[in-house]
Image (cartoon, rainbow, N blue to C red):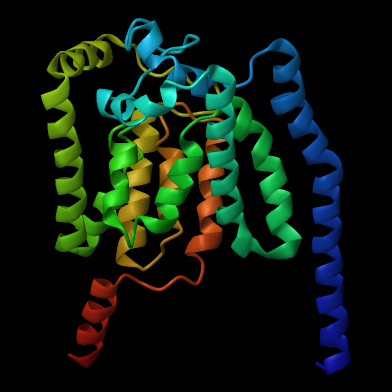
Length: 289
């Protein structure tokens, strides 16, 4: 094959990718902005989940049934950690929380480059601000958690099931990060229980009495998705495929939806990042043996 023919084919592929990207700008961005931002603003529905975080101490921490407005589903530890922010007026809290999520999205999408990064960033912003869920922070955990094991305390004390990092460490027999993540989580839980043991009793009753997450028809039950996520992470850990971690976290989300796909923005940060030191040392020893 001549160099000219190869260049022409490469040019056609690039042109197709450019056409796809422009098509997404034209179609997807306006739809996402209208559906996730403009309509909620008009209806006064901005901050569905973030409002639950802000009002957790005002409304009674577990006084609202799951799935309703202002319902807080997470452990008392998360409520205690964000307590200083809940003292702010609602508009100020919403602004601070939204700026935090947007900053995280900007950091996650930066490695995607000038072609795809801005598109993913703009598409993700409306749902991130409108819902205000911790899924954006889960993207940061997925991007950094294989190197900083302590970060897995966030999913462990909120949604629990998407906590895939410790499973990754276990499958790879990386005992230090596994123990580190467990100790940090245990320390936070111990401090939280010491401050308010009654809230943990209320949370246990709340979780036990809550119905299974109501998911739509396109989504499989949680136990099936969680099982698939476990298998995916174990396979990824054994074969050095770090992209399996954010994908498994999406699969294991208790209430999946388009907004949970924001966790996949971690893929840009995982691509090309170095392995944790212990894994590299172990791989080097194995190759020498």
